[in-house]
Image 1 (cartoon, rainbow over the protein chains, first blue to last red):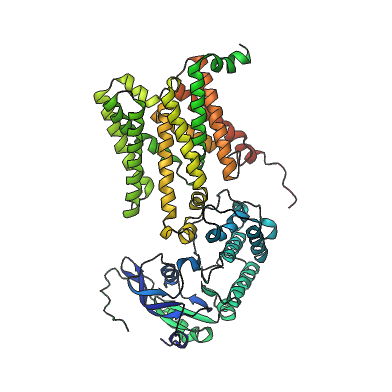
Image 2: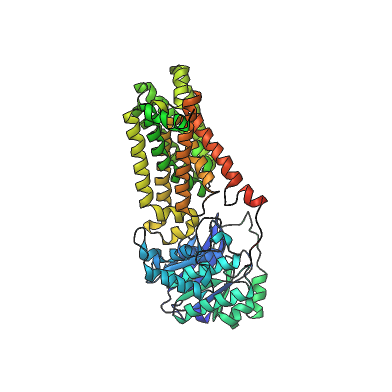
Amino acid sequence: MASTTADALANPLIRLTDLTLGYRRHPAVHHLSGGFREGSLTAVVGPNGAGKSTLLKAIVGALRPLDGRVTLHGLTAADIAYLPQQAGIERDFPIDVLDTVLLGHWRRVGLFRSIGPALTRQAGEALAAVGLSGFKRRPIAALSAGQFQRVLFARLLLQDARLILLDEPFTAIDARTTADLLEVVRRWHGERRTVVAVLHDLEQVRSHFPETLLLAREPVAWDRTADALAPANLARARAMAESWDDKAALCRRSAP
Amino acid sequence: MTLYDFAAAPFLEFGFMRRALAACLALSLGCGPVGVLLVLRRMSLMGDAMSHAVLPGAAIGFLAAGLSLWAMSIGGFLAGLAVALLAGLVSRVTALREDASFAAFYLISLAGGVLIVSLRGSNVDLMHVLFGTILAVDDAGLLLVAGIATVTLLTLALLYRPLVVECFDPGFLRAVGGAGGRLGALCHLVFLVLVVLNLVGGFQALGTLMAVGLMMLPAASARFWAEGIATLALTAMALAFAAGIGGLLLSFHLNLPSGPSIVLVAGAGYLLSLALGPVGSLRTRWFPGRHLEA
């Protein structure tokens, strides 16, 4: 694996050491090593079933590695904000947009502390940043998929996390919403937050994401975007076998 | 018969009717919000299962101490809690989903309860356990129901935020909630205890099979009147209390058993809400009114 960026990491924020992740002992991510630098903006790209979402789940700690490990340096669970692909959110729940966004303050207010005017104003600013100023009292059941994604981004804004993990945040979202939300991502990058996003649109990745991890179960490339998405790498990623082999033998590959 | 004779006189003239009214008020205060949360968590049928699960505990209490309120309530509470915990445990450690394991355990529990009652008690006792006796609620029963309502409201006030978030976006609560991501599971557990407590409270007044009626019917009806969680809970309380008053009057004047009367009035309230309520009812579906400008 040609990986200048990953190898040059002296002190990454997240280090992956010979990480193998999977379900029922079948690997979905196989022997991945490398790291995400503090303040980096990385796209994770690859075919369906390549282990992209699985990798994010392992970073937040929702999935135990089959082998190897994820090490967070100076990060606690509290510093991570994670937007899953299929957030198990009850969309007809009787809650309005403002209350949903205010959940982003959870760490500051917890179970009992009141949400004062300052925190409410911040929520209003977050809504304005994602272009939903007039929607505060709208029930979330009345929002379109794109508007709801904007609401979730506003909530991420309030979470004020050092590490932000986005799993296919722009799927089924129109061009204008995508552009607005990419602007939010750029702002996070400017604030030296570390952002890792699973994406499919390679043009989008090339124009907005400086670094790319190309996964096809095996890591194919982890590098500056232009190098990682070179035609040869993309061809290798496409050749990945998607189905797993029921009679696969035990993996004998040792840690590097 | 004047309105006074119909609606006020029974409560003013008879102590047992006043007690029953107070018991209904207490039940409504506790069952209303618990039912709303059950509906929001898509656990409406879980309440039903739990109400059946309470039976063997109550029956064992009955065998041990006769028709003693405390023995039957404690027995019922323990049986309901055991079913809730076992079902939750099975769904966490095996592949079986929680609703399926609930169904399995409550059926075992119900069959055990019916067996115990029919082996040792007379049919009159069985009717008593199944259909309740709100018109015979004594001071101890009233204290029990009021105590349960108090505990329920205080606990809900304490756990309001995590409970609501656990319904709305459990993944988010797992990520930010603290307690090692177990805050959601903890809230779920406490909530199930509240469900069992309220069913035990309703059980001596309305009977095991009817107790869940005062919990679910007003909560389901409230969905047609209100859109926020707090307003849903208040609406459910009001509807439950109204059903209590209506059912008591019906059973008083027509000499009907009180438990089914109360639940049937709550059912009538549900049908009316379904037809006429302002939020998502048949009326708004069939006569939506002209669309707005923006």
